[in-house]
Image (tube, rainbow, N blue to C red; front, side):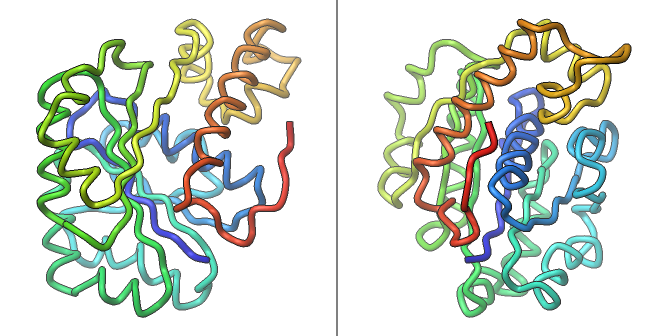
Length: 241
């Protein structure tokens, strides 16, 4: 079962790239074939860490966005991860609407997953409502409460946006935050999560307990992904911890 995963939040600093990287590592470890696309013009966060899997794409160009779908012609069984930069919802929605892409994906048997990664602020809650308003019934929605970027998500729990999302079957999940020092080192050395856990030598190697913290964090993140019905392709065969 092929899938396309748009991982966004429409605002910066909520952890979309970390979520995209975790999903990429999940697909790698579960032997799910996938292609990644990085829409961030300045930091290229996704591509920095998973250069063998992700390539850049320009969101405000139809020709650029078309690359995301073109790969399905040659490999219809693959999945796709799109790491959406901040303020990309308008050009993305126009691209999807003008080509009736949701209908095309349905005809091709491709599952569409919109991931809304959020901190605990009011604007993240409001942007969730905007996402559901834009696409309505049809795609899957995964609302990610990122505890690496927030601690109190009561605004979400009491919101009209959450009611809208749940009315169209959204899954609401929580991702724990990774220890700050470990995450800084991973970012500083452009480490994949696999390398962060397994590399024991060199200037970029994490310490024993840092590697353990990353391993436990990734294992907990995988447990969240495992529970999502929209991430149950037939290719998922094994764990690698």
